[in-house]
Structures are given as structure tokens and as C-alpha cells.
Image (cartoon, rainbow, N blue to C red; front, side):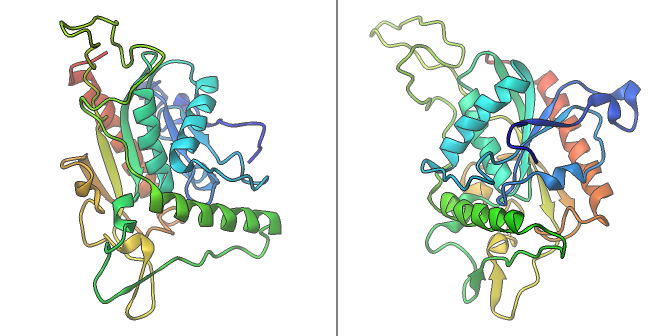
Length: 295
């Protein structure tokens, strides 16, 4: 992971299992709570360009006072350097799914981009971390990270620092609004509007659609002590991991993947997780060819 190379290309379209059937619609995968994208490099090629954006403050330790919205704005700027315009997919594991959602809302106001869909890899709704949310009579506890014997100390410190900041960011994060509740833009019309005013002299808001999303959902729970549950499992009993509280029908499909939240990228699970990610991307791309455009 290099600070001066962000985003990075993980796989090109032709790297997939069948180069003759590849797609050139890219997916941009955003880092998890630990700030790195190592897990995505473990995936098999999925027949389309796959980029990653890692936390550029991983080594410096610089914080993000503006939380997830600030991170998302910066990541959109980074993405523009690698993918200057066009149709894209966004995705990410855990925190990466939340960042993808926020980035999608920012890009909804940019006529140069169309976010075809979002793939969340076991991303828990941030509403689950609000007061009184969770599992009754069970104590929710953070997961203690495990590192290999050869892991550099600076990497351990970076991951732990990023996780601590991510937990705080998620606790205060309010997911974006969509439909006709567009955010005001003082610089002019947004989301494809042409500046035409209605009879009352107001510029009408364009229809702002939430991109379709697909969830890759871990089948298992993180091992925990009796009467404890991992923070990432407080909504595990819900099929949508709490996202129905955000938008009913938010996910167009939910695909099960093996393992629990923290080991879904283990080598024994990689083939299935890669297949499910490929399936989700294909489904979202097909949906985009059938859906009406609001651009």
C-alpha cells in the first residue's frame, strides 16, 4: 500500500475467468475500517476492472474531523483521477460499504458520472450503533484484531488507529437522503438540472435516485464470550443487517457468503466470495440496462 498511488488498479477486465465475456464497467472498492485494501487483493479476478481506494492517512495518523462525509468527498476526488467520467460501480467491505453509499450521493450531483449500483460486503447499518440499538441482555463488544507474527509494528498501529477512528465515525454518521430531497448547491443546478425555473421562480429539483444495492452477507457470527456479541453482529438476526431502517427495499438482492464478518476473506472462502461479488456486479449492470435514466 503506497500513499502516492491511490486509487490502485487491482485487476483489469481481461484478467477475469473468460476474457471474451468481460465487462469494462469498473467497480471501485473502498477500504474497510482498518484503512487498508489488502483483502481485495486476495479476491479472484471478476471479469471487470477493479480499483481500490485505501485510507491516505493510514501512515500519517492524520484524522478526519468531518467523519465519513469528509472521507467520501476526498475519495471522490481521488477516484476522478483514475476514472474521469462514465458509469461505475462502488463497493466495499464493512466501513467501505458506508463510504460507497456516501460517495454515490455525492456523485448523484455530478452529471459526468452514473453510479450503476453499490455492493456492500457485510456492511452493517450505522443506525445499529445508535443508542438503544442492539441485542437485549447481551453486551456488544468490539473485535480484538489479530495480526500475523511478521506484521510490521507500524502496520499494527495504523490498523488499530484507523479502527478506533472508524468506530467513532460510524456512531455519528447519518446516511444520505435521496429522491427529491436533494442537497442545496449554491454554485448552480445539480444532478443534471438545466436551471429552468418554475412559475414561482424556484429551480425544480431533479429526481435523485438511490442506486440499487446488493448485500453480500456473512452466514456466521463472530465467536464471542457467553452473554456477549460482536458489534458487527448486533443486527445479524436481521436479513438486511438493519438497513430496512434506512430505506425499505434498499437491497435488490442479498447473497450469502461463508464465514463471519472478520474472516470472509480467508483463503478457504475466497472462491465463493469472489463468485458472489462477480454475480452482484453482473446483476447490477443488467439492471442498469433496463432502468430508465434520470440524467
